[in-house]
Amino acid sequence: MSWVVENSLAWYHKLFINILKCGPIPRHIAFIMDGNRRYASKQNVNKAVGHTRGFDKLAETLLWCREMGVREVTVYAFSIENFKRSEEEVETLMQLAKEKYAKILEEKDKLHENGVCIRVIGNLNLIPKDLRKSIAQAVLMTKNNNKSFLNVAFAYTSRDEITNSMQTIATSDLDAEEIDSDLISSCMYSSESERPDILIRSSGEVRFSDFLLWQIWNTNVIFTDVLWPDFSVWHFFACIFQYQRCYKNMQLVGESLEKEPKGGKTMAGLEERRLKQLEIYAS
Amino acid sequence: MNGKMHQRNFVYKLLWHLVHTVFTIFKCIHDIYLQLECKLIEWRLGNRCEAQILDNLQKATAKLKKMPKHLTILLGTEEPSHNDLAKLVLWSLTAGISFISFYDVQGKLKMNEEELKESVKRILPKTANVIWHNPECSYKNGFSGPKIHVQVLTQKDGHKALVETCKNLSKSNLEISIQAVDEDLRKQYKFPDPDLGIYFGDYFNLCGYPPWQIRLTEFLNIPSHHNLKDYKLINVLRRYNKCEQRVGK
Image (cartoon, rainbow over all chains, first blue to last red):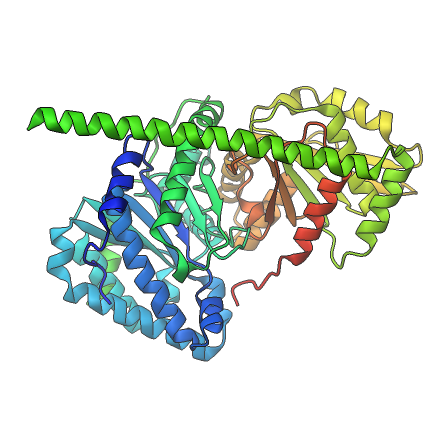
């Protein structure tokens, strides 16, 4: 299945979208797409099928987000901890990822037409060479698109991201006293992202498993019991609706947290360095 | 054409308000139902004295397979109620939890920490030891009898603590690794990473809670901490026992 799916929404879905659009709409939603394996065992199919259904659901969700006007989506595709799974399953997941990234290159026109920019956040050093090459190619190919953004967290953990950001700062010639939280944010893998407004974790787990811990300081966290492949457009509407219910509260929290003036510091030249690294990986 | 679009948008807006209003009404009814349910449970339990409550709590929690070592409480945007929070300290001590922390984004709890200490002192038995942690005083050894460590966290323990760690590590010649960050942060946070977090309110927002420490924390909800009841804590601890950690696998 493809990254950009045909619009399969019925008129009553569209009606709901138009109604929800009258309220505040999140700019950025993060997903922990949990439950593919449980779905597979429930349906009596093998794990690989579960993961494929999970991907199809992602493509569908991206469509819903575009229709709803959500500009940015981040998904937890593969954690550094996932390397600990059985060799066979890691191999399957890498294979699936390879296929999907190859598909991005095939679907160039559709992605450009929809203005989809695909970014990767994570420790690329840990990814097998051939997969890393396809990832780098996909990122470079879509880097100028700016209508919607998809961040794929691959070989990612939040602790690794924070530590990596600190390493970047320590190796620069900045004075230690100049360090502030804006600077740390600007050196993250996800430096170009906005703060997520909603984080959704499916399949009833109630923890973050090292995902975006630094970024979700003022985010509406939604733990839902549904398994990821079963996540429907109605679940999606319910999440948006919940966000609208707590929108005012989030603004209050934002106010009590942002009392101090923002430093707005960034690391000069980091973007160019990353781009160069990607070009090396892609070649 | 334009007029038609205006008309349509007006209808959408109207429906949006309608949907939210209907939801508000249903939520009110649901809240009343929940309150009645609580009343019914309390009526069934009858009038219990403090000793009975503690005894019951001890029995119920002794049956559980795992108990969080560190329980952290997220107040969300609720006004802190010192008496209820003090009850939580007492019940956690009874259930065998060794560390409890409170996070309040507004900083009110930190400002009135002395009052909280007083409330805790009032209800805790004389033999119990409560060890308060704050940046100025750290843990002293040599207590006998049951003990619990308590600390109040604020926004300063969040991003700002990580900024301090970043400064410390940049100045030192240490290699920056996950472990180095963890060790440096431990100097400020002191407690082990929380195993269980209880958040209050209808919606879950971390409100700037220290990010580094909650990698594997399970988060469960109690709608409000005002007029908190022991069976609500028992329920949460039971749900916590159903959580299974696979750590990536």
